[in-house]
Image 1 (cartoon, rainbow, N blue to C red):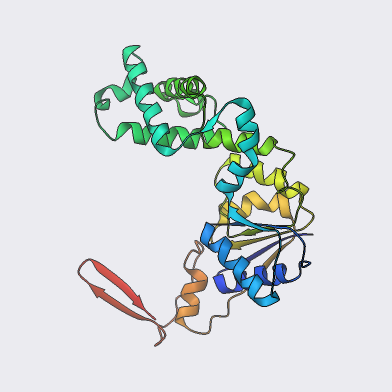
Image 2 (image 1 turned 120 degrees about the vertical axis):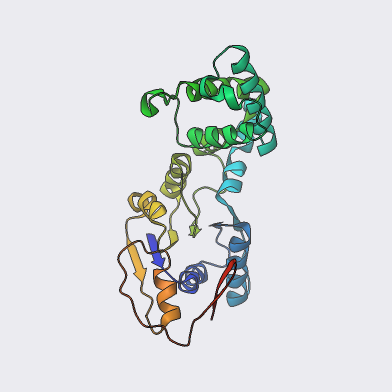
Length: 278
């Protein structure tokens, strides 16, 4: 069974996740992927407290899960996962190389700025996670980025490093892990890139039972997961007072109906500060 639960209140989503965990057999393995390692651990502890014990519950973030799936194949390929500092160092090398070859283009005036390698690292990471191999045609005069992307891939291969995109690629192709083919709980996991979607497609397709919780307003994740999980349920938040309305509509981009404030919320404003006191 595959199901998506959406709600504006975290406690309602957590309630559904806890009920899903409570329905698991005592010795059944479960994969819990949380938005953070702490959230995955907290829902597991909640489940254990309610039922008394839980064996074989694997809890981690999506990034950590990808690293676990990919580590054996990466070792076989002779690749080492790259950390952010090493990626930034590679971008310094890329900029130096492009400057020597006269291919910096629009980056030439800011080539000596200390923030350029970090900015380039973030940009190339996003492009790689999106599956881009060339971008000049899509962005018009983005010849410099095309050259930087090609040089970056070459530097990764030369250093025998795997960036986040490569780790996700290898993880998606993995088949022999004990973490695959078991019930899956996606707890408010945000899906932002094509690489993440591909990995989840591979994992969900093998899971016998999947529950995904999504916060209202995270339309990107809802769009990514809808084709994978199908059945969707929205737990409505009753607008009892102003606080409930804030919880329900905080990330709602649609048109809102204005209502009178009530004592459940007090707005306090001071120089440089705006606070909600509830």
